[in-house]
Image (cartoon, rainbow, N blue to C red):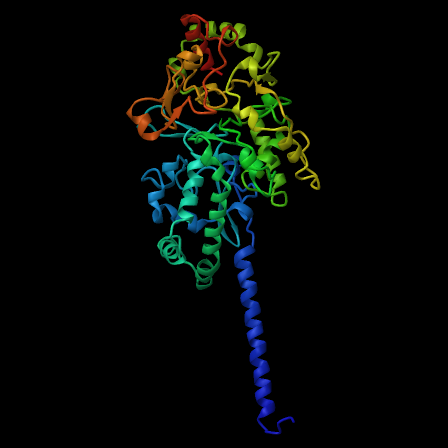
Length: 489
C-alpha cells in the first residue's frame, strides 16, 4: 500500500535528484579519467632528424612505460643498475636539455609515456680522447647502449618488493606535481599495471638466460620477434638459436638500393625493413605512423656519416696507394661498383660465425610475410638466405667492432689471420684509437667502461673473412696503405 505521508513525494524527488547528480558526477569522472588515460597528443619536431632521435614509431600504446615511473626507477632501484650514473650506466646517450636519451620517445597517450625508437640502437658516439666532448651521430651503430641490460634492469625493478605505489609516488612527487586525479590513477591503476607489464616482459625474455649476453652495441634482432606471443609466436623451447649481432648503421641507404638488407639479406625492401623495425621495437600494425616512417625512410636515404675525425693527419700519398690495394683486393665485394656488392655471400665461403644465419628460418620468413596481410603495407619480401651480405664500407671507421657479430675490435685486427685476432677484449668504450681504426678495447679505462667479449662463446667467433681474398695475406706495407685509404670512406 503506497504511503500517504505528505513528505514522501518530496523525499522521493530528492532521492532521484541526488541519484541523478551522482550519475552525472560519476559520468564526468569517467570522462575525465578516460581523457587522462587515453587522449593522444601529437608530437612536433623542427626537423626529421629530431623526429628520428626522439619521435614516436608507435610503440607507446603497447610497450610504453609511464614517463614519471621510468624517470624515477634509477633513483628507487640503483642496486639493479651496473653503475652509479643512472640510465647512463647502461650506455644511453643524452643531449643537453633533452627529457630523454637519444632513441627514446616521450609521448602523451592519456599520460606521458616513454618508448624506444630506431635511434635507441642506431645512434653512434665517439670521443677523440677520454676528456673530449662526446660526438653523437644519428643513424650510426650504437657502441655503448646495452639493450639487454636495460631489459634486465626493468624486470629486476618490477620484481623488487619495493615496486609499490607508495614508494614510487613518493619519488615521483619529488620530480613533478601530480593532480589529485593523477595521484589516484597512478596509485590504483598506472603503477600496478606497469609493474605487471614489466614482469610479463621479463618473463617473455627468459630465453635469453640460456644464451650468451648481447653486451653493448649488440642485439639479437629477430629472436624477440620470433618468440613474441603476439608476433610470430614461435616457441623458444624448440629453438635454441643465437642471433647476437653487431648493430648496423642506417646511413647512406641510397647506396644500398636494391641490395639485400640486414646482415643475412633477409629482406631487400627498405620500406619493409623500416616498418618491421618499428614492430620489432614495440609498435603494432594499427599504431604504426606510416606517413612519419616514410619521411624517416627518405631521411635514411640521404643521411651521411661524419668524416674521419683525424683527416688532418691523413697521409694522402699512402691513402692513394691503399686505394689501389682496395680495388685489387676488396672492391669486388665492397666497392659500390663491385660485382658482388649487396649480394649474399654463402657462409661457407666467407667462413664467419654461422649462428646469426641459423637464427632466421624459412618458417619465420613465411610468418612475417603473412603477419599484416589486411594492411595496405603488408610484408612480402622476407626470405631465408644461406649467407651474409657484402656491404658497402661507407663510414667504416665508425663501425667498429667488425664482422656481423662484432667479434674483431679494429680494422687492423681484421686484416690479421683469424688465429692472430684478439680472443678477448672490451667493447662499449667509445674513445677512438686512430692508428688501429677502432675503439680502445684494452687497458684500465676500457675495462672500467666496457663489457668483456669472449670469442670462445657460441655466436661470438672471430673466425672467417680470412685468406688471400680477404686481405689477411697482404704484406704489412699494403695493409698500412689499405687502412689509410679506408679512413677516407
